[in-house]
Every structure is written in C-alpha cells, then in structure tokens.
Image (cartoon, rainbow, N blue to C red):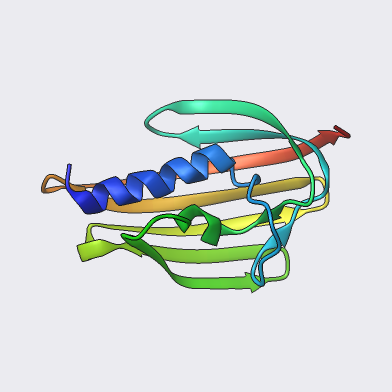
Length: 138
C-alpha cells in the first residue's frame, strides 16, 4: 500500500471513530450538535453496518478534525450552507480524494463521504454513509 493511500485510510478511520459526530471544540465552519445521547448507524461497503451510542456535550461536527495530525491530506474545500456542511479533501500525490456532505438539525443528522484512492496501482472507490438520532439525555 502506498503512503498516500495509508494517509487517506487514516482520515477515513477518523471519520469512523468520530461517527461524524464526536468532533469537539468550536470551529468557524462546523455544525453544532445538541447535547445528549446520540445513536449513529454507519454504513461502509467494506465492513457493513455498525450502530453505536455516544454521549455528546459541546460537540461540533467539523470535517477539519479528520485531518488533525495528518500531514499527507488536506481540506481543499469546505462550505457551510444552513445545516449542511460540504467538503473535499485530497491526499499527497493524487493518491486519494474524498467528497462529503454532513447535515445536522435538532435531534437528527446524516451524511455521506465518497472516496477514490489508489492502492498499489489499483484504483478503488467507495461511499460511506451515516444516520444519527438523539435518543435522550446522557
């Protein structure tokens, strides 16, 4: 696996760990998440569907957090339009790109990230999506 594909893989792992909702700290271009217990269902063509619950407080949905500590990938576009955040990121040497959309309003949210990457000369693509609902207080 080449280094750029590894970098994109680390970014994608961040998406999965965050479940799209766990990024904390205020950012200029983020979507605030209502405090409480959230249930998130992730759909990934490689690993299937996974549902988890997480207690969130003062959380902000911000794709820029996916890149913290990641030198090989950078956010190339990010736009906030009401309750919808869109972004594009690229990794070193053109080895990987991703485009995403995240939406949060009140007690629900959803999103999708489409990725294209090159692993050892093989071009691959996949789309991950998630739905989240606030199920109550923590």
